[in-house]
Length: 174
Image: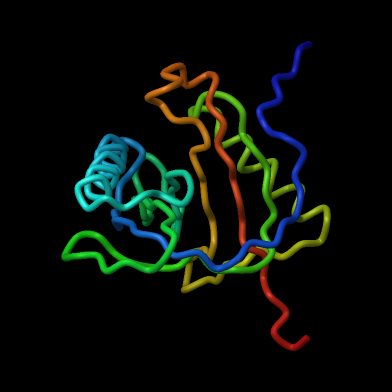
């Protein structure tokens, strides 16, 4: 039996704190078109102000949802320096620190398998992901999907690359 592999070999990397501009949204998988529209709005906002992205568009997940429960996320783009947003555009920071990272290769519809594999790998390596619980709600402090492939230059989603990164829990006692 042929097993499709969509994920690169995971690794741990140190990332610096990075400013970004973003738009917050809550949406279920069935409402995902709204999230994609926000990505286009954010790119347009930056272009109108002459702001060059300092990295690829990403989704920052705070709460993971599904078809019925809403995801709580931000659509974001890194920028060189902090820039003021407006009533819709937020100015924030990607946390610096150690991240467990891998690259998903292929259609975003298969991304869930890669996300799961990365979590399993981190657990096997005894790496603790930076998240907390508020009652039954799991809240992530650094869970990112960065779209390395530009859909304008590569319209076939089967050829896309998406970097997935989870912030590792810091040992502040060290």
